[in-house]
Image (tube, rainbow, N blue to C red):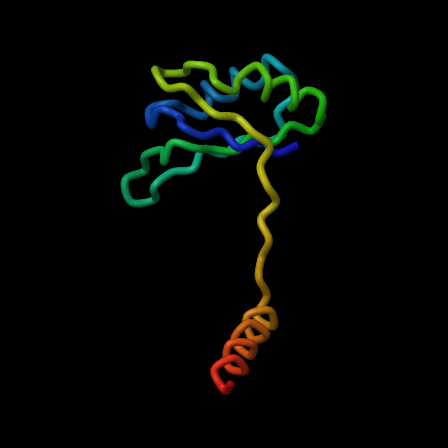
Length: 101
């Protein structure tokens, strides 16, 4: 299960996050989102835990916890829906049809 972690202190490291989540089970992957130019954390990241039960326990125990002086938010990450080129064409066709009325 992929979890979204928000409101992280920008000084929080991936190692610190890994330690937090491994206390509740196996961590398959972890990504701290960074500003490419400054190489600083953007204050959020993702943790993927293969066992949904462990991920739910981690979410329940870590959501609202103070880490690095910040009250973090942990929730299930929503799947990102990619829009295809044909979807975009369909959207613009509908707009064109509306403008002809």
